[in-house]
Image 1 (tube, rainbow, N blue to C red):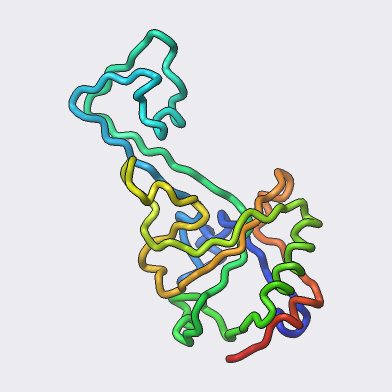
Image 2 (image 1 turned 90 degrees about the vertical axis):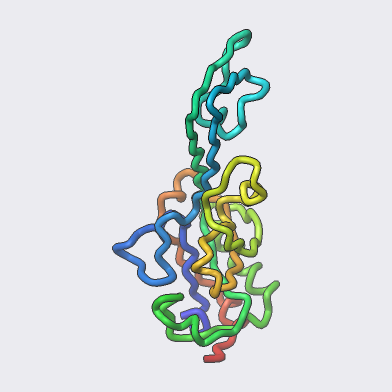
Length: 200
């Protein structure tokens, strides 16, 4: 479809969690999430000033002139980012055709990246989606303790280490409220076909 008629599928992150639709390297039950874990000590006193931000995101602010006494508790703040993404690999590797990776039957090279992106972005804008960023996936896992450098990554760019062979880059669009529940947007533009060539 991509090379012949310029059609691609731009999927929602949440849709890639759907085991009934996806398998192998496409299925990712935690796609679009990142979790920060806060472990409180044996006895801590939290005020609004020293309460860890991930916990504040869960419980809200502590009222002025009050404090919470916390004893050996664990808090997990899960950040969810549903957005539309188009996933690409940054390397040529026929092993990615395997079902355990992408379950694909072709490798297509984008030979005009600017033209390809412009064509996709025009159609995504028609659905009310704004371009957010192009990100290179970080294969560092999705769960990290508060203060760890991994908590600095956005939920759209983190994946588990087992997917690292994919060497994935993503084009990411923010979704409008009335489109965010769509599993995907089928994008068709004649410039997509002319920007690509099949190499396998």
